[in-house]
Image (tube, rainbow, N blue to C red; front, side):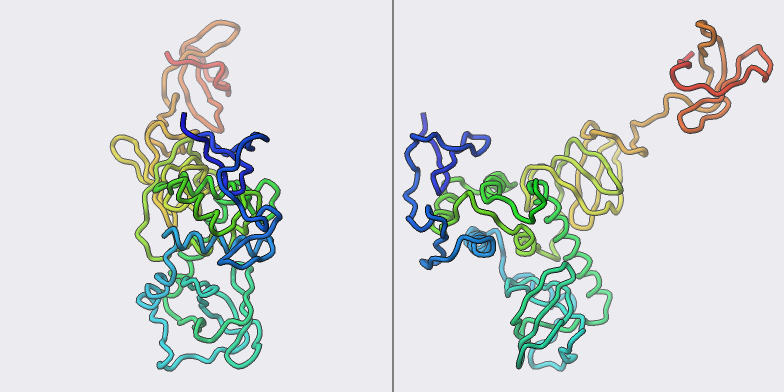
Length: 358
């Protein structure tokens, strides 16, 4: 039997399907530093307090080293798409109230916001459109939003992708705290569409000093995982249903969320092929739902042929007997029926329980 796999802090054991508390007598799979066990996080050989921001920062660094975050790539793509002015080009002044695009925490992805105040020479406080606030932002990470359709398209895409990630992480936020347990994140990272090797991820988390009983700000994670301007990936989904114009279900191999429950952004369009397979397009992703992949089929699904139609000949239950009849009208799942051979004074509205196919 293979040796059990323990979490970096030795408190959890991997069963092959999920993390469970390690048995009290189980040997620790890794030797943790005393400061980690005591509640501190070792990040780049520096002891920092084990709070949400510290752990989140460490996790983001780990994601970079694992190649899951392509730092600064989206910045160059943004320049190509909406032509962010360089330092040597003339641009609008950065003033209080200006609508700007800001390289959030210098991770490379530009998010829309507004200049809230000026702290000093070339230093600003930014209020992002998503509610986040960042202070001491230098001017070289800020550009005033150009008045263009390309800029608007970029803002809509980056905002929608960020919200989709937040909504998906929120599935694990049972207390609506804005955080998820790092053990949940570890599970996600080792079950993604291109999953990490458990030992590799465990080794890195140990090196970064990230305990699996700490909390992580998943809104920051969503921001760092946003990668605008990529082609829309396709994700297979089962147990799908549409609620309030959005697709809900279980996604397989999501490029950022792996296998798990997905709540999408608003549906743009749905198309069916000749086998009734649906392609459900949202702002950032195309979801593939097979003919039997629906928990509740949409009203326009090809398989939803009505059982009864106007003018159809049927049998009608009246007085515990079945009589020949016709459907004259259908409204709100009720049927206006006519008894064949009887005058219209006998016509009546009935529910589905009183009719059957002829």
